[in-house]
Amino acid sequence: DTGVSQDPRHKITKRGQNVTFRCDPISEHNRLYWYRQTLGQGPEFLTYFQNEAQLEKSRLLSDRFSAERPKGSFSTLEIQRTEQGDSAMYLCASSLKDGNEQFFGPGTRLTVL
Amino acid sequence: AQTVTQSQPEMSVQEAETVTLSCTYDTSESDYYLFWYKQPPSRQMILVIRQEAYKQQNATENRFSVNFQKAAKSFSLKISDSQLGDAAMYFCAQSDSNYQLIWGAGTKLIIKP
Image (spheres, each protein chain N blue to C red):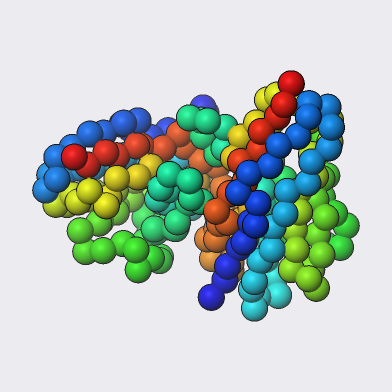
């Protein structure tokens, strides 16, 4: 296993368009997390899954954001009707259910023009 | 609400010398974990060191060690024999009962050759 992977690494879109990001966690990890990181700041929690169940969502996750993890493996994060304020790095991390170290992917950098 | 504060936006150190990065946190939980993550420029977040709150002994990982003061809610990172490859953003984070990470704003570490 090569670690957590994310696709695409970079995405440029126009305001109002929809975008979807994918995260593939480490295969035996039950938990998957999404974070958003803006320049010069620490990551902010968005949501997390345990297997296929989405257990918690941040208030940051407006109704334009939706995340899925349909078979408890990879996850997708979709942003509808993107706004310039959505421009950020979107990080995915995974961990074992009872583990505490989160392993991070390289992130998807979103630029909304 | 849980918070993590890193009061040093930027620190610099001469190569081979020692530097300490500060972190304070606020939580009402009795059982939690603390982490230092490193994020090199344009590269992914990697774990440097972690500390279980119930352990009194400070964690160490090679040149990295922490000074964990539970009563003061302080968790500083000491880097000994600094190397050029240590240059990065360093984030302090605390996990809650759901293993979500609450992050500080980060400290940019500059290594002077």
